[in-house]
Image (tube, rainbow, N blue to C red; front, side):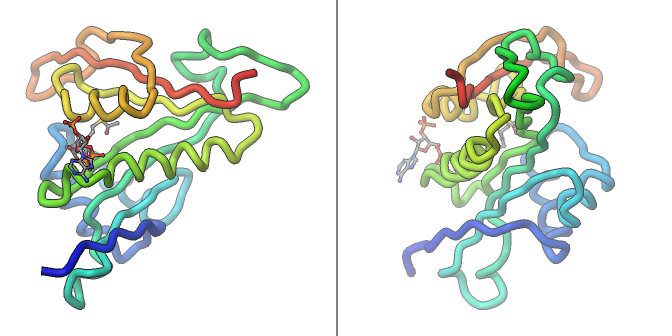
Length: 181
Ligand code: ACO
């Protein structure tokens, strides 16, 4: 078999079905169709897709991984207390990662790491941006190892943050600080 040739590209409307399918397959939480519409139509959600160009025709542009995020004022986030404010630099912002996933057969090749790097690169390009943060369910060891390896810091444990089938689960809040003087 040919060696995978992983590329990153924006998510577009033709990804809708596949994006919804992967989210259904790998997350315990359901997302509204409004969320997917916003992602594929480039609303206020930022996204990056991973594809394998070495797959046979018809599949060479199909999503094998993705990351979705949004940017907003740091003051309006739950970690506003962790940000240093500097009035001459304009309103500080933070990037929040909503979802990150890689289909099972493409895991453990560094694709998620590269997707996170894309988000960090984007965040670093915005002068007023102070970091990237996310929530992860407390028992998701592969994801937690990934964030730690990429120098995210665990700043909080939120009790009962997720409710799945009526059961409460804790989450960790991880932050990658940038542009910190
Ligand atoms: N050869 C061998 N091992 C490798 C290679 C390689 N070339 N490249 C990376 N690895 C290893 C890493 O060291 C890491 O090892 P570890 O888990 O033992 O520490 C492991 O592979 C995973 O790292 P990546 O390859 O960068 O990550 P991957 O692409 O496998 O994706 C992810 C990780 C996203 C967590 C995936 O498992 C997944 O989609 N899970 C289900 C959905 C999920 O949990 N998403 C995150 C939820 S939190 C949120 O969405 C904000």
